[in-house]
Amino acid sequence: MNKKIALICGVSGQDGSYLARLLIEKNYEVWGTSRDAQGSSFSNLVRLEINEKVNCISMVPEDFRSVLVALRKSQPDELYYLAGQSSVGLSFEQPAETIQSIALGTLNVLEACRMMDKEIRVYQAGSSECFGDTEGHAATELTPFRPRSPYAVAKSSAFWLVDNYREAYNLFVCTGVLFNHESLFRPSRFVTQKIISTAKRIANGSDEKLILGRLDISRDWGWAPEYVEAMWLMLQQPQPEDFVIATGELNSLEAFVETVFEHVDLNWKQHVVHDEQFTRPTELMASFGDPSKASKVLNWQARYKMRDVIKMMME
Image (cartoon, rainbow, N blue to C red; front, side, top):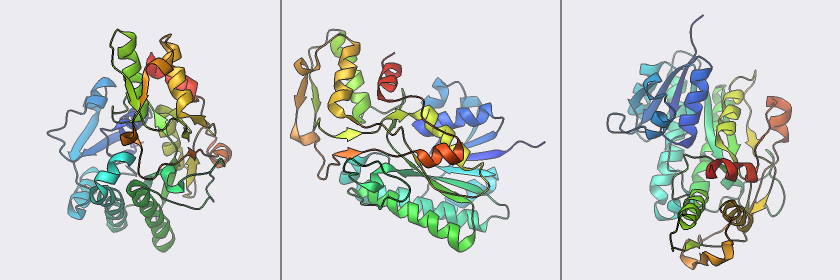
């Protein structure tokens, strides 16, 4: 029996690297893209000891020809589009790059798949940011979008492109609307990694302060290696559908900070400073999801919640 072939666009990121490991364990032939495959260190793949098992190629999502060449070279059965600018905060500073890499990148992938001679099942990485502030209610697949950042606008556009191509061209394409998911591979610009790294340094003798914006915001934090399994499960279904992937648990950033400092036996109030410059122009006060559909259809549910995630990242 021939191996299934998967192409992961954005393989060097947090989700891409964990997904690559999962697919290798499932005996896939795995291809991965980066804007400059020759110049990239693929450090996450190296840390997972799978760098030599992934066929890495260059692809620029905004360039249709580049996308088509990557598909023709890899000939995938499944494509996971995880590429694009991934920081909500940075999207306010780089809105054009954010929207082009996500929305135009998704369009190019969908159009290239439509032109291929074989059926390719496509997963597109959606985001809970599309919902905006859920105001204390858990978002489902039927919750209306209220994007409040350039990043969220881009992800919303990509979601509707997928929906349109699925309906108009009968492609097997779906979106996973993922809520916050963390791991050891989170870049330092993300607040969870910033909190954990700074707390560790303070515990080891640093006299620095942890500088944060609002602490009264609340989020749904899960464990990234679990979430990539949900991505794979979506492409194994008989029909393409969109799914909310979340823990269903809402926690404040203050609770996150307090739990992190508890792990190093410190009182967080003595080490945290508030600074308005870290408050976004449009801040979401509460955002969490209802993963009931994923539980029922995919038989997927999050085993790890916020406190588990912090424990694993700290250790």
